[in-house]
Length: 456
Image (cartoon, rainbow, N blue to C red; front, side):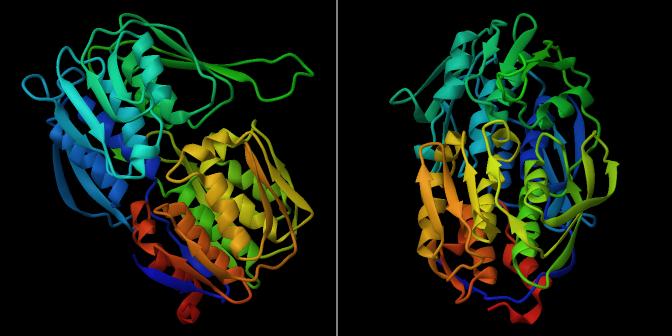
């Protein structure tokens, strides 16, 4: 286990291109493997999680040629992926084919949608100790409704066993807005016997829908308006048509908003900071943290907004230090800010008033129980913060003492500790800093770039 110490200070100043988007990288590799012919993927994230996805599709028969580092996207690589076709996943006879997902929860929850509809074959998806604590019943249930043959430990935990079967087009209503669960069902719907509809209680990130449309799949989505006075966002209904084959064009992966968010939040809470985060994906179903920053009065905005190949909007996120006001984040906002909610807790430490997050039960099923780990971690640094069943409450004091935080094998908790250290009075020692490599291998290097030589 590696230990690193951060802060206090100096300010974050300068321009940086964050690493490629992890969520889009996973999807690009999986859909390219499901397609026919070769697909050029530019700026694929080179990290532990996304390497697990490349290993998985290789085991399933796809050809993966690594051309070299990306010139446009630091931390990315250029790939040529040769697909096996929608119904051609390897694993058709003999012993079940093991698929090691490592620590990649996105891979664990999306890939089974494709495998479930194969004509034959058995696959066992398993991973590290953290993955084995992450429930898969929310994908196993909908897939079973569609006729899939799936099973898991204790009916909810990995390993997840998937056997190929004929799938039925069954309407699905999700209890929790989850882009991973939705994506799994969408991929299964491509192999079903008719159009598959999904109703989610609130809009979740739509990277899969965008990529499927780019591949020629008919995917429609519309909001189902709630009655005035009931509150909350409109439910969203998505429908996907089954297809015989996928044909993707070239895919260009933008910079990862979740990675950029650490530096934007750092700029907001560290005096003297002023950063520009270039070519960052600003998909509105993903960019909840930007709205939260603005609502808290942070000096942040988007410059140079445009559409990247494949339909994902990108831009430069600008952020600088300023006074913050507490806010409330409710379940309506959680799906589009789920990965950044730990950073909201850190913002709350420096905001005037009480910052409250509710409706975020999903945080308990991440790499760690992120409600417990974030609350315990920040409390250990001197924050006035308490856990709630579905979120947390933070009372701002405009200061954080510092101390020690255990990353608990959670990459976002490791990076949270580093940013907290810069804004703290005494610095923060992060135990298990190597976890950052799961999604952002160059995090410490890029943090040094923005802080100069003052970073310990």
